[in-house]
Length: 231
Length: 231
DNA sequence: GCGGCGAGGATTGTCAACAATCATGTCGCC
DNA sequence: GGCGACATGATTGTTGACAATCCTCGCCGC
Image (tube, rainbow over all chains, first blue to last red; front, side):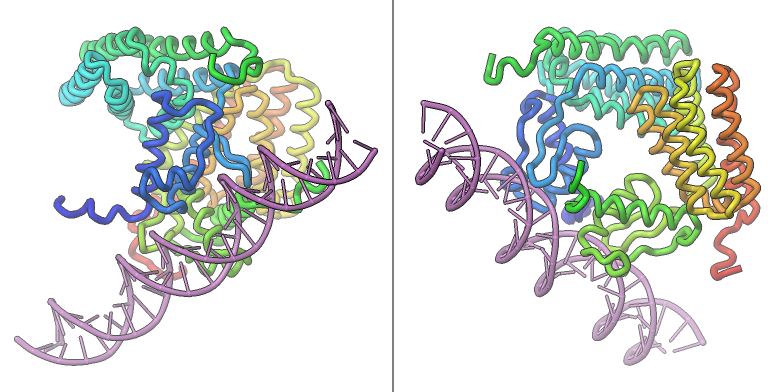
């Protein structure tokens, strides 16, 4: 690998922009109902509008934004019932994957997971929400990849993406970040000890905090159309 | 709803073309490794190349075709191991959905399912593979929609799509079609009688024939590059 | 005869301008 | 003073042409 990155071709730029927008949504830089206008984004990312359009289409398929014809795109507002359903599916998928992970785990896998987990811990310690988010994604990807079923892993990531718009509450909370860090450590431990029941339970319970935090936040202001401007 | 369908806008045409190509793949009109040329498709469907490009991107995301930059698109060749993994996930998802369907089922649902099922039966009797395929999809969509979790249903459809390229073996086989028809009838019956165990078992076993037929076909000619032209 | 090599054709990727559509604000009328 | 039609501006959707890339095939030198 030397000069390969000079020609990002087509899909790469599109993916890069989609990921960037996704990150801004997760980190709360972009709020629900906020509009995303193609030309503006094209200028910000220094690409042509065509590329932005494809990225927006991708984000719409992933469930992060909504697009109405001739009107534009806006980050999707997730209603609690939808979030509950998604988390229900996530629980099923992730426990299924956890149940299929061969135990005892390969030591190399444990080492790799520990590396990623420490990257996450460092980010949490530094209060770097963006790095924490990235490390968190990397951890889960590496963890579930061990189950051996690539398509199952893809589904898990897909469903995780769908609630990324609901993650801005927990993504910036130090309490939640610290809890996630500890749970990651426990997962690696369970993996190392070959404790399947504990691993499955950890994967299931790991989902609960962010789900409940979002639902609580939304339902606290259960008449969201009452106020229109800042609180 | 009155004059809504007059302006298909953008996404509808794209979806229509994607569906059309998907059908041709499932029915065996388009064989694996066959190339899909944008301009050719644009002419055939009487749309601009831009729309075809989006449709191909969609089909690539759905796992039906493969695209390499600057080289073009071709219908994907599924290797048996991948098919096994997909069916493994499908089994998990569909049994999960079947387990969540409220029983006893709403009579209206049973009536609707019976209607779709009879459409399928008629298509099988007439030997109309295309109509059978459509009715089959409609039946499964209606069946699993009863589980109440929209996102789970989407996942089920998504995974079903991924093996559509492997369906051309069974989609034209009268034996398989007749078997599927009978199994559909049994499912409706189990739904009506509130027999959950039977329903779940039927959903699981319903997947087996097409999976095994494909794997057997591929592994029978386990040196697929030997012959290049028509048999 | 055989392998590198370059020209040509086919196909995809990119671009900028044009057309269609929707939201907003303004003016005239009741 | 309120309400509706209209003009305007902002934004998206579409089109055709242009550029970059890759594969095929024939040619030349060895």
